[in-house]
Length: 205
Image (spheres, rainbow, N blue to C red):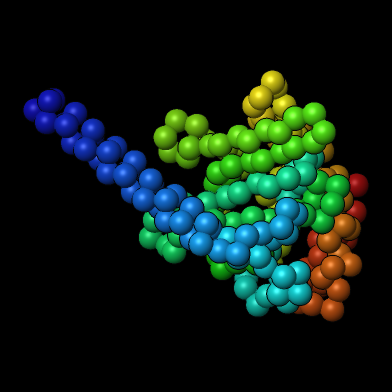
C-alpha cells in the first residue's frame, strides 16, 4: 500500500513538472516568435507594448514595483489553465517599473534577469517549481493599482539575487513609484487611482 502511495506521488510530481516545462516552452516559443522588445520597454510574448497602449489599456489591474537595477526582468504566467504569457515590465527609470495592465486572476513568477554594465554581464535564470524560484511572484487580484513590492538587487560574482526591502520602507518606495509614473498616466483612467493612492500613503506618515 505504501509503495502504491509513493508511486502515485512520484507520478503526480512528474506530471506537474512536465506541465510546467510545456508552459515555459510555450512562453519562450511565443517570445522568440515576436519582433523583440527594446530594453526598458514593456513586452508581451516578445511583442513590444507601446507606452500609449499601456497607459490607455482598459484592463482591470495595473501592477507596479521597484527594483534597483536596469536591464530585463522577465516573468512567466504560471497558471496552466490560462493562456501562456511571457511578460516584461516597462521601466520608468530609477528602479520604477510597471507591467501592461492585465485581467485579474493571472499568476506570475520571475523567470529571468539580465543585467549588464561596463564591468560585468549577469544573467540569472529561475526554474519555478523545479527547485529554484525567483523572489518575485504575484497574482493579479485587484481592480485598480497593485504594488508588488520594492526589491534590492544583489550581485555576488557571476550570479544575482533579490531581497525584499524592510517592511517599514515599502511605502517610501511605493510613493517613489507613483510619483515617477504619474505624469505618464495623465488624462487616463489610471490617473485617479494614482492620485488616490499617493494621498493614502502621505496620510500614513
